[in-house]
Image (cartoon, rainbow, N blue to C red; front, side, top):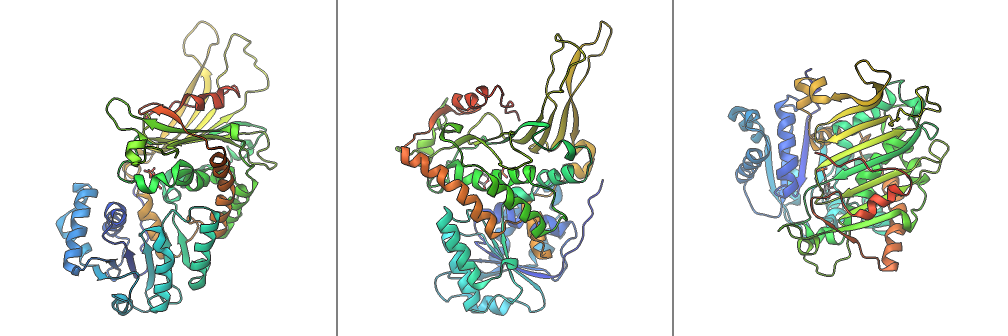
Length: 484
Ligand code: BG6
């Protein structure tokens, strides 16, 4: 199945932090792939902006090497790469001073979509917004794209929202959570709201519990100083996992439109109960078989920051009363594996008698790797000899089901950047959502800080701390295995 590509309007996209890691790994390669697929008009222009004094030519060379490192060779024919690089420019800019701002203002073409991507340290978000406004760089309909972390807590997020709001309207602010750009995350909405099959069962009467897992094999080495001030709760739960939880738990929006979707997500966040201290397990990986432990990676021998967190949360509303949501995420785990598993309740009565063990129906939405959807159902074990039941998966791997198109899923960033150009905010967080997410997260963190809790140790390459198993065992449930 070949993906439909709908071209976007001509645009000027300025990438602040254009020489940085995110620009090289994700933004430039993503833009190139959209270009190669024919989505970008010839008049589109992308301008790197950063502190270094370099020529546009030197910036194009930097971009070329980013493409070499992050775009598959078969997608990099020299002619296409050259045409793409021809649409790149560069402006050296001093974020705190005046240098470069006039040049940037001159480079903006009236009548084109204008977007400014803030791929810089979070401390600079407010300053950039001010400068764009003061130097009259941004036109009245310009869009700004703000990376995470959006604040460190409720207070700082509110301050940042207020600073941005002083210069840009909410409809101009695109707060990125790249999880919302992942194909399967959007598929979650398609599965729920484009099929009759699941929605009638999508409530506490039929769903026993939900598990959301985002497991990573990487440690925090290389970004220890950021991470140590953050931890898994702020780095992953407050944003990515919260968004997944919202998409699973929200009421059907009346249309797939920005405010309709975001209103429903917001209601979920506001319906979250405070988490009881006994319902959270925090972990920290320790040195294992030669791999350094968290303390070394973080460069802080006394750190109490968690690299793993598991918790049980409740969404207090009619739909979900009585269905717990178990969330977990961690670094240096057994495998890179992110999935959502919705486990349905047992049928009320077994006609097959006691001897036939019943296994749960589970709908598994696999985010990465091997994106796909699986539904575990009971069937009869083949062959003679009576009625024996067996639990098997109805398996839909996107790669198999969609042919070549399934293997060529656009990266979250490229999709989200094109949404910015189109002016579609559906997959971006609104200010009040971020606010509500912090309002729920802050007391959880404050509680463990007050108690001076230390995270429990776990070995690298495992499923995380033993205590996390207990979190489910005591409820008579089990985590799904973390598998690649
Ligand atoms: C980022 C976090 O937002 O998401 C990282 O800061 C994490 O700590 C990353 O590794 C995970 O993203 P993905 O797309 O690789 O699952």
